[in-house]
Length: 347
Ligand SMILES: NC(=O)c1ccc[n+]([C@@H]2O[C@H](COP(=O)([O-])OP(=O)(O)OC[C@H]3O[C@@H](n4cnc5c(N)ncnc54)[C@H](O)[C@@H]3O)[C@@H](O)[C@H]2O)c1
Image 1 (cartoon, rainbow, N blue to C red):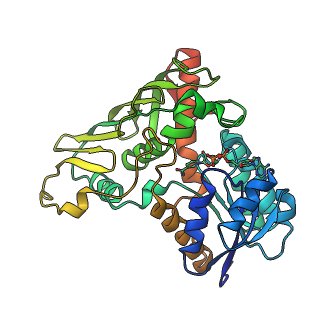
Image 2 (cartoon, rainbow, N blue to C red):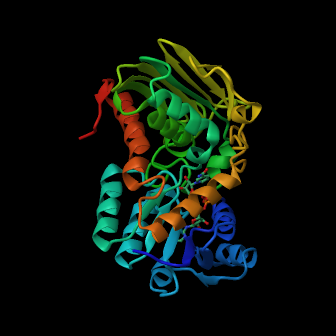
């Protein structure tokens, strides 16, 4: 489907919605025409800051608006697929915040609904737009480190009890779908999967160790990747203060280590030269502050989504891609629950 200007509606006007406004306003051939929140004041407040688009309190009404071509879904995670399926049925393209949903069957139904309706489905994983992660992935996928030995993600953040109490969906199985991994860690888990390739199995522990929440605030996993490498994932929101995440990649011929969004070790045979600009990205780290999020990443993803509609191609992160991190996290939960290693794909 080709279109000239993509007219967006934003559904869910909470913390992340202004990043979508920024992304739409900063993208070519994109325009914000409507916002929706069940809390009218939140929708009105966002509309006031963003050129006064139309305000809705029922997403079905926004979806019935013929002026809307595409929607950004910024509601609690457990509603993404439900709203996305309704959007697809109404003929709207769907760009969903991470995680694409909290259940695989819901993501599969969303992918199928978008295919059936002939609309595009994209997911937000803004770190995939950063030069450093693209460069690391290219080096590893090109085999520059030789046979891969280890791929690790250490995600040690801080979220207070007040943070979990700030929204009745936060820290619940029903709508957050998990905690330190499904909400915060999912970005680094996406990068680990994207860079190292498919995961074969996980053996994990996950539990709420500090916070008064249903879901995990801490999890660890031993990983086996399909390329034969092993790895470790540690994720928490209960260390104080929160630390920058670290991702580490080791092959028989080299090492790459990243702290926050900065490469701290780059031992890549045949590619020793590296300029300063390669080492840094302006992708913020939300290690202690949930609002410290790289704005330009959302803009690049929204511009890519607009271009995908105009060029009739897949967006940068398809439904199938966004599904992978959710599958990994659900395997971690399953392993912790059963005390057994879990093999992917999940059945
Ligand atoms: N990409 C990122 O870095 C990033 C950062 C933060 C949040 N997120 C994701 O964005 C989503 C929202 O998170 P948040 O922190 O903005 O949450 P939030 O609670 O601040 O905002 C969610 C909003 O959705 C509204 N809402 C709930 N049900 C609705 C419905 N049926 N129709 C319309 N509006 C509805 C709520 O009233 C609320 O205003 C989550 O899925 C989260 O994982 C992504």
